[in-house]
Amino acid sequence: MVSTQDIDGPLDGQPDEQASQILTPLMVSNLTFSMDNGRFARASRGKAWDPQNVRVRSSAFRACFNGNANKMLLEEGLILLGNIEDADNPEGQLTVNTQLLPLWLSYSPVELLSRLGYQTTGMVHRELKEHHNGVECDVLAIPRGTSASEVLVYVDASIGYLPVRLATSYRGTPRQDISITYKPNASVGWIASKWESRYFNHDGGLERSLTGEATAVSINEPLEDSLFELQFPTGTHIVWHKEDGDEYYIQDLGKVRPISEMEYGVLPDSR
Image 1 (cartoon, helix red, strand yellow):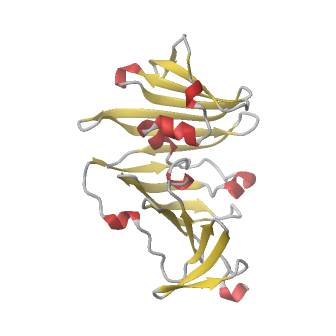
Image 2 (image 1 turned 45 degrees about the vertical axis):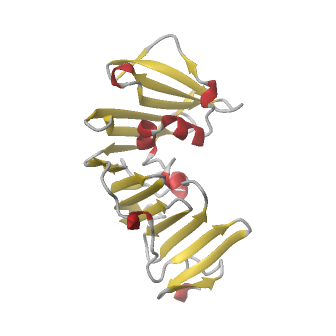
Image 3 (image 1 turned 180 degrees about the vertical axis):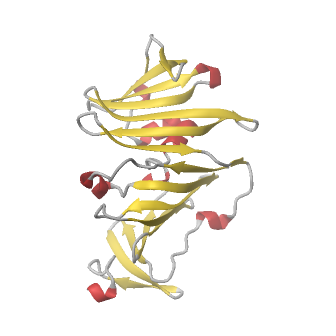
């Protein structure tokens, strides 16, 4: 069991309009990530740009996986938005989300790279070592199917070959670069303490960056079951992803009421 907190951001300047349509950029947030016997939970609270990139507003997000289903709740703006997905594994907000990538890379790099589509069985150990932050590292090159994408993983032998850098590229152009710093831990040897994630546009120019620092870590401490369950507040608009299509609901007192897709995410006086 691991519970960590980090602070990521801030962003420099106003976010790019196209990028903001993909993911609401965070300026700064406090984040807690917990896992226990195949269950996962994430909670974050901070500041984010509004969809028009004009004003900064408060943003709160929760996601959990209890072993059977993923649930998410976004508190941003005037309407609470919920999401349910029946699945037997945690989805992207709990694994490959940009804020959590460094933690997963330090904890379970093979699982993370597999989720990102890289063929770890085709890993190649490069003969020449390279330096990262003044430390000599072994470099592993991993292909991504038949595409021109490649990831280089830098591992540090002095700390048990843990990954200290992950650099992805497409046709030789950098797309993502993650650096991780570790500190000793009496229970597990080493834990991630600081990290920086940089993302690049199609031309290789820096698009945005996230920095994080673990402010508290607990291992093998009991965690409440309620941490991995999510109760939607009254008024939450919920989309439930099912095999035969999406269903839409609104959370009333003690029950959910079906609504149409057109009503989802819309205030009553705006319909």
